[in-house]
Length: 399
Image (cartoon, rainbow, N blue to C red; front, side, top):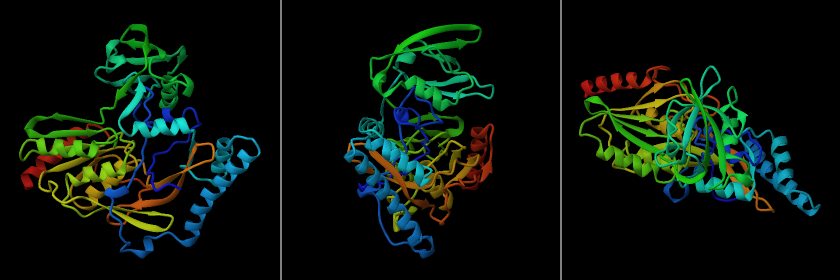
């Protein structure tokens, strides 16, 4: 087992499509972007102050045995001349691990690369509307989609001749991304599009693109909105820079809606922009309790609202829980997804990777997130940004 821990959002997917379905709530034209954490040297480890939060020995042995079962199944299959990866997939399925997954070596390498903020795709984001139609919600500047003139608000009717209306967003991602063999930069994908009464087709070539994980915009009254789409490499520092450059005394909206997670070290760095050190979260790995701490020196005075919704997952929930428990932010929106488990990867004999659940994390007050999510301080399904501005104005008056 490697020393890298993974806090991942759900990936109940088949191999080959694995990288296309990771961000179910933010369709990045087949972008492969995951919800990993790597506590590594930036994390602090300390015994838990609450022994009751430690998992039982039975839970610890179960987590360990699942890794052993998968590894043994893979080794036996290889010895018999069969596919270790397929054997591992069957073992993961039998284990009942809700978040367990197996990746080919190539898929996993691409998955990790995506955490550096890179992906192969055409540069569009989309969502499924209530009537089942797929609407483009954002087009990345300089991308093939932008060059083709595709705009926010356009509707996607088909991908390579297959109708997408009514399909889950994850399936649409799979079509856009293509199979593992034909998803490289330079490969073509044909899109059927609709804008008002106009219907047309575009054939685009996939390209290597950088994700726009952090976007910043200014609102009236000196309010800065920092939108974090995912916690890829460098996002934590980007958030701190955005805070440093915000107008003096102005409030901040940290928009985590639709954020499916990412590198937890980046989420902790982002927390450090708003906290003066202290606990961000605790988590356990096979019974060993660990803790994540913010760096000192963050801006603790500026009014702050965190925007969340049902697409806020994993590392984004960890950050939200820390800001809420520490009394640093008012959380506005709807209940978050509820993904608070810890995964760790292990390399199989053929180079593929099995990723299995080994524990769970908790907020600073000891709240478990998995299966529960985080309840906002102020419910606001619609016009939540306007509600956030109203809250900020009140916080400014109070200060």
